[in-house]
Image 1 (tube, rainbow, N blue to C red):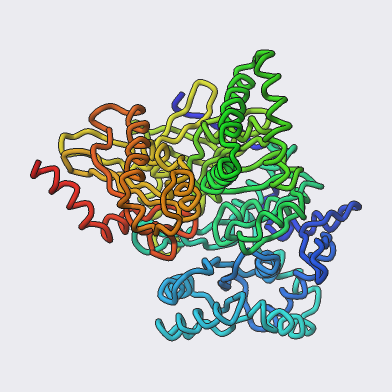
Image 2 (cartoon, rainbow, N blue to C red):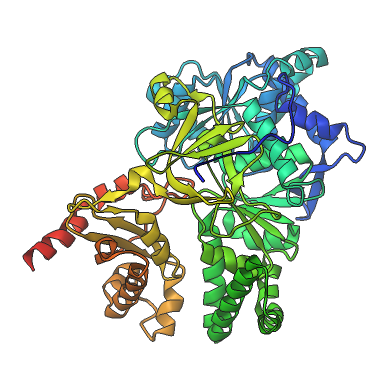
Length: 603
């Protein structure tokens, strides 16, 4: 199949905007809880739709009284917390446009976004974030930015006080100004290459996609459903899910520090979660390491094999009796404990941001957590396609959501069209024209559609490696296989215009101590020392050999180097959404790469 289009399930009037989602829930007799926050006692307290509307309107009135005009851009720089969504909707109620900024951004990065978007104000979390914004203003002489409101300070109270002078009629006029075709937010790409581009996403992108996603996923996105948000709300994936929950009346809690994720999952007990594949890898690896450290590694691995086999059999339509029995035994021994650690009530997880792979998909499905993998970009308001409980093929990223379409170009590139696709890139009509062909958005990803319309992702078009002999190599296939091991944190495959394929590998700092202990190696061994240990190299070589069995000899990794430090966001090698900045890695480790090929040439 080369093309699939799914008609809308929900038609939305053209004069609708995102604020209508809040009004819709507040008008319900059930008055559902839209958010939950931790009170002074540490208990979760619900915020109803009517209460959320009241709080949003108070802040929106303050923005209007402070001089914010229709169409003005307001930045948002904070960790994932309730006030982020409160400010987001208040900006929309005031008729303005929100501009998310990753809270880890440097002054130079913030200056670019504030300047390019023309922001007139900014919500920030703390004094540290305000200091970064102030530095950014001085760096580029951003005289248009008049206001900075701090969540941890008195910023919101200042707005509430200022808003007393704005009447309900003025607010209603502001709220009603935008329609589906108007820009709601400008989200800057996290920038694996070059300066971030501002993606103009409309109210229609959010409202039409939310309403149709809710109709397609009624078991997951529903009133009474609960999720806990820990991904950055500056990222389009978390942002869309947050808006979707308001659209359907589900409740969102927040945990800004992932160190608190496990206890927060257990106390809040969500019914569904969303995460990027790296989080699922961590859950799997941490469960495995805990079992191995407790002398129960054989039980874990046997249980994992049964879970995967059960899931594959269930997807094929027939589960043999012996497998059912084994699955029931491991449900008591293993699977139930993993589910309990995640709160005990999680039935579905939504995965996006990068390919998950069928191994993890089948494992989690087999333990009782259906992972609904989807696919999208910042430019597509997150999901173009997604698996649903009724239509799922593990290993794929599902079929288009209602209102979306996918086409595979002659060179294998995935093209997208529909309610999800952005208006364009801010201030860059040249890039906007380049991104579209005959009305289809060029995703830059390579993939294929099967006979049932399920999309599978092969890799990034720009990341395809062409060796000196002209062989095309997709690095993600090898990288994902190697990174699946708990000892490995990151893997970057190298070889463009080179004689053979090689790889840079980093070790997982959290997993390393347990691995050393199980292999009778000194406990105080550092990451740099471990990179030189023969036993560690043997383990990585084994992983490389396994990965090589999945590709041809010309695509196989011939050499690798273990890098002594990990690739992280702090080192500048990962984006805030945990994608590898491949060009930056190759630049910073060019000497290591050169040593691989010069050594080979001397042999």
